[in-house]
Length: 105
Ligand SMILES: NC(=O)c1ccc[n+]([C@@H]2O[C@H](COP(=O)([O-])OP(=O)(O)OC[C@H]3O[C@@H](n4cnc5c(N)ncnc54)[C@H](OP(=O)(O)O)[C@@H]3O)[C@@H](O)[C@H]2O)c1
Image 1 (cartoon, rainbow, N blue to C red):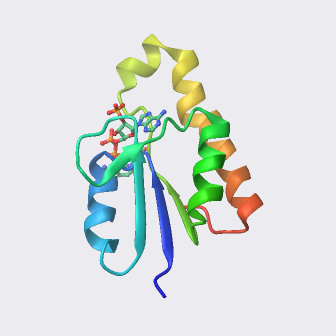
Image 2 (image 1 turned 30 degrees about the vertical axis):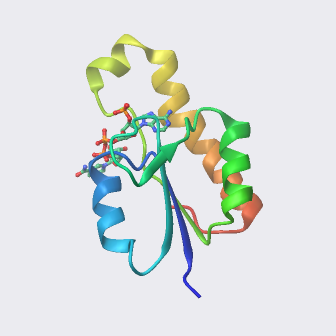
């Protein structure tokens, strides 16, 4: 049986690369706020409960958390959202992988 990989914030450059490499070998679910491809479904990982429900339902063997605000200009303009997206959400993702007892990447 194929191992399961959940990729949060996988609609960007790195997510697309991971998806192309892993899609045949693994059962993959990719989510993002930007639904720019047919293989991406919606999750805003700033929403802790929604993120937890997604993971409890998909039951991944690995959690890849790739999404981020990568524009330094935006991060300087909206420090609160930058902190929530790039720090708090990552901290939450670590907690969730610990709860599921799976590797966090
Ligand atoms: N690309 C590289 O070569 C590289 C190398 C080393 C490290 N990294 C790091 O790897 C991470 C990803 O890089 P990337 O190049 O793939 O960046 P990217 O192309 O900007 O992709 C990031 C994705 O995360 C999404 N996102 C932002 N907030 C989200 C949220 N709350 N919930 C769900 N998705 C959200 C973005 O959506 P929006 O576009 O709508 O904001 C975007 O689709 C970053 O931390 C980056 O610094 C990248």
